[in-house]
Picture: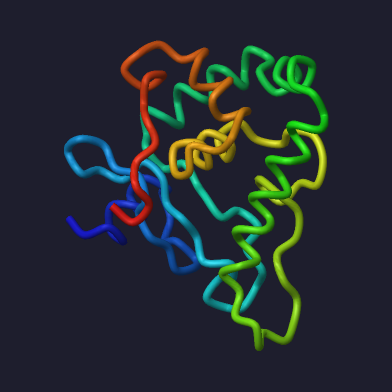
Length: 156
């Protein structure tokens, strides 16, 4: 099965923009996709990294359901969270052509500017880049083998 068909199956809908699979399971199944900064219709796409692996999504959902968003916000310093959002924003903005004229995606992870909106987006960012303390925090609360997942090389 090609990546488009498999990601469509995992999402339960056709992706609305271009993407690359940047983290895969040992069997090649997509776990994280990196989205283009714009959907096919030109709408800004704030979510650069998206968690699509079914078992990963379920595991992170359990952490969220147990109050993970509030817990991580209480445990991590606001400056650490703000820095994650800034790095995410900067990386996404770097993918926008210099001659782009029009609206651009805003915010950091999941499109938010402050705090934590979605642990799934942070785990996707961590798995893809190895640079998200909230993603690390979340993965530490998930039993192996998912919780032991290591970042892979982007584009693999």
